[in-house]
Picture 1: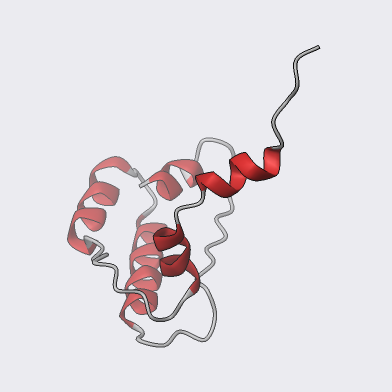
Picture 2: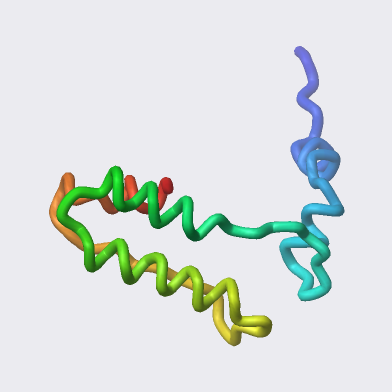
Length: 92
């Protein structure tokens, strides 16, 4: 019967140490700069009837990204009926 390689060795090989270092350290030198103006434009064009959600999402993201030392991670909890755009907003 064929032997199956250990999952642990394959998983360990898949880790990108630079990425891991960037995600878990406060010493990250990533060049991530979110495009808030583009996000606002996308939300305005594609999210109908949700002006309050649009304003709150952009405001929360801006405040979090511009804080040099946030004390907690940003968590957005989107609520509403089916078809109101929760998944769509999170995808944008």
